[in-house]
Length: 376
Ligand SMILES: Cc1ncc(COP(=O)(O)O)c(C=O)c1O
Image (tube, rainbow, N blue to C red; front, side, top):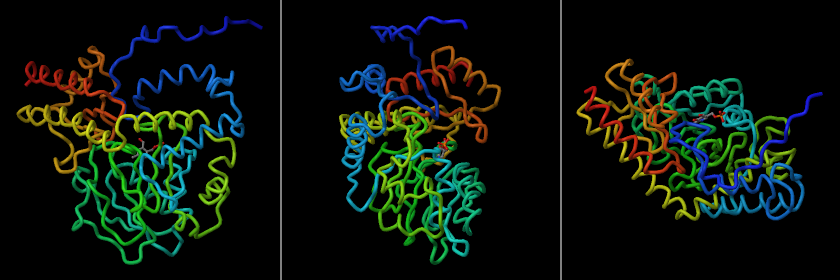
C-alpha cells in the first residue's frame, strides 16, 4: 500500500488564493465571509473540537445549527407559523416530481405556465401523475417573457398553479406572482431571497440552494401546513412533506454541510439589510449590465423583453456566434468565468446572484464597452 502525505492545512493567509470573477449560473459564487467562516468550521465548529462535516446530525451542535437556520430563514422572509421550513434533498428536480406526486390526483388538473426549460421539465414530471394545463406557451415567443395576466389561460378548479419566478436560462422573471385563486406553487431556485417574497401568497415555494443560498445538495422548501396535509395518494416517506416536517428535516441523515452553509448565508443576508437590502443591491448590479446592453447601439441584444428582465441572470446575444466565441475567450483572459449561455439559449449569460459583487458587474460592463469599440 502506498501512503500519501496528509493534505496541507489551509493557508493561514487565505487571501493568497487567487479568485476570479465567477458568473456561473450554479453552483455559483458564495459570500466571501461565509466561505472564510466555513474554512474554519471545517476544522472545528463552534469550539466543539470537531469539524462541521464530522458532527452527528442528531447531536447538540447540529441541533443548534439547524434550529438557528430555520429561525433565521423565518426572520428573513417573515415566515409565520402557518408554514413549515424544510431542508430536503434531490435538488430542485426532485421537487418537479414530488409536488405532483403529493398534490395532483390522476383525474385532476394543474396549471403550468411554461416559461423556460425548467418549467418544461416540471410539466413532464407532473404528467406522470395527473393532467397539466399549459397555461402559457413561452416557446412561441422564444421564452422572451413571462405571461401577463391576460396571456394566462387558467383552468377552473386547478389543483394548483405552478410557476418559476425567475427563469435562469432566458433571464426573465415575474415582477409579482401570477394571479390565481388556485394554491400557488413556485420554483424560486435562481432568485430565492434576492428580493422580498410574499410567503403567505404561496402554498409551497422552493429553491435548490446552489445559486443564492449555499452549496448544491440541499433544497429549501417552505410549505403551508394546511396544504401539506392534502396528499392525494400514498407516497414513500422521503417524498412525504408531512413526514419530513414531523421529523424536522431529519428523517434520515440530512445534508448537514449544506444546511450549515445555508444558515451562514441567511445570517449574511440579514446583515446586508435583509431582503430589501438584497433587492437594492441586485437592482443596482443588474442595471449596470442592462445599461451596457441598451447603450451598445444594438450590438448586444437582451434575450428578455425589458419589462421582464431578471436581476439574477442577464442573458444576451451578439451579432454572430463567432463574435460570441471571441467575447467569451477575451472575457476569460480577463478573469471572467462562466459567461457562456445555456446550451438551449446560446449566447452570453451573466449570473449575478446575491453574493456577486457590483464591482464584477462594472468590470464586465467596461469589458463589453471596449469589445463593442473594437468589433462594433
Ligand atoms: C429555476 C431552476 N429550477 C430547477 C433547476 C434544477 O436544479 P437541480 O439541478 O438542483 O435539480 C434549475 C437549475 O439550474 C433552475 O435554474
